Image (cartoon, rainbow, N blue to C red; front, top):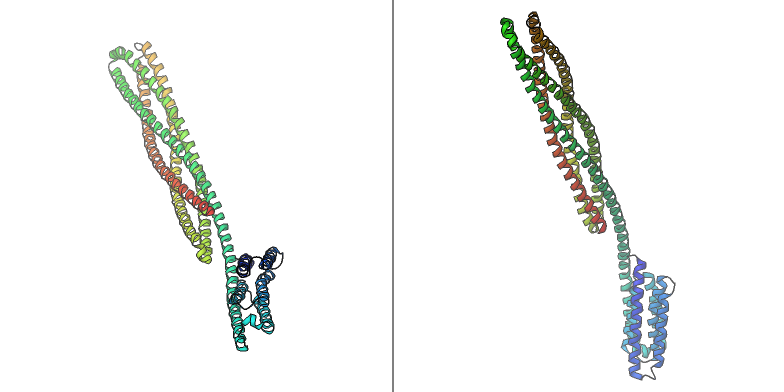
Length: 495
């Protein structure tokens, strides 16, 4: 509250007191002299009340208004001393007007009023001393009354000096408190904007982590399908190897016993047809495996790009957490300067600092986890490309095996037609079987390597999926913290 506001309040109080004084003066006079004789006093009271009301709305300075408010009852009492005999209530009204001037806490007004009161007092003693001091008036009584009035004004003068200083100090402190409140509001708005930015970044990170989680799940499913395909491939190649070994045994028997070869040629031709169908089936599995490996490699590449984007967003979150911490520290300092007015903001600033520290810690933990996940995905990326190369080699070998089986099939057809007349072809066919055996053994080794690689990829992807779940939970906690920070800032602004 400034001094001008204080004066306006005192004006209203003095206006009310003026009407009360008019009632206290007029009503007893009407009671003593009758209503007809008291008409003059009533009209005088109305005039004085009108002057007081006009003074309240007069566009003048506060000091002029205050002086007029106090001079009106003083002048009325001065006139009453001339018009009426001595009564003690007139002295009460005189002291009441002194109290009215003291309400303004202005030394200049008290000095001016003291001078006017001194003039009025001396005039009354010189012209109507009996009306002023009573029938037994004398100089000592006048000196006593005048000393009491002057002592009262002097005491009010010193009291006004102290009160005026207190009003100015209160106004200054109020202005400082308002400035601090504005500064704290600005800090809260800045923290609110940071909280909104942190909330948006957290939402973006969560959306990216959801996409990463879906991609990881797709990779895991593709890897499991690839592992199943490789397992089927290994079983088929094992069956082919067993069939080839059986065929070699049959070929050895055929070389030793040519008569039995003729009888068993038909069975061998049938076995070769089944083996040829199995090789074709293995080729289909290899094509499926190749598609799965390519899909896994492409998905791992997308996973690495998404992790890099997550790391970038986490760095932004750490920056926002640091800025929020600094803003909360500044808010604590400003709240401490505000004293009692800033206790609520100090509590809010402390909570904001805690939330900022928790956000920074969670962001740091997520950064570590995403770094580990990036290393795992890098290893999976290398393994997937190695698997892709192994699958391509397997396809190449299966193509050679298919060609060999085609050649074997043609050879067995020729053997079936010319077995009796062409026994020399049996030896060549046996050699072809040994070549096929070596190729199948090579294919079995590649299949075993692919199986081990696929199992490692599945294990890595399973660990990555667990890490992604952990990151998703941490992101959700961070999102809850940012929402809590935003709610605190909004509740502080409303309060």
